[in-house]
Image 1: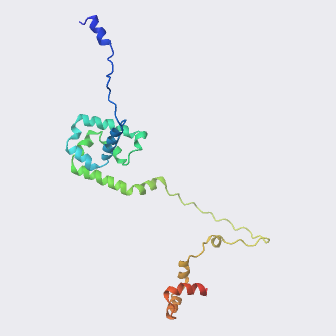
Image 2 (image 1 turned 45 degrees about the horizontal axis):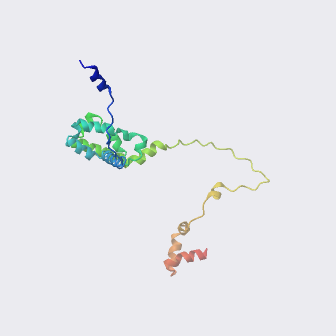
Image 3 (image 1 turned 90 degrees about the vertical axis):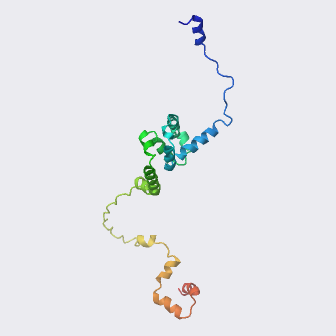
Length: 199
């Protein structure tokens, strides 16, 4: 049995060391290294490399992957440029996925799925965000009796039609008119000015 003097010595709280480690850049270097590593996880080829070199068999490395899950918090996620890395980090918590990524066929499958996601992301997102509204049934309104004191209102098509562009003026000419202008000896470059002055 221990003497009372030994019990008193063990109950004392050890004093903290006088020379504690102070990070010279306040953790900036560690932050950047972890950010770079976690963004490398967005690459299925890199995950395949880690699996081939048996990093996923090391318990310390598995613990490091669990530790890196803090990057999913909003205050850290804003620094991530490749969001697929968080998805792969979540998948790497599963031992079946870690062992499956050692096979080249699974690496290619993950890479192909990632490519198709990037390729169709915008179109798929727009389909879900902006669904097309159903066409509304139009009910014909009965014509209003004309009022004798008011002049007839202009039709909506003439009021809203935009002015014709110069290209549309050229299309209004018949083919015969443009041929006859060429036969009359008018230079093609000057044809536009002749048409505008004649109208």
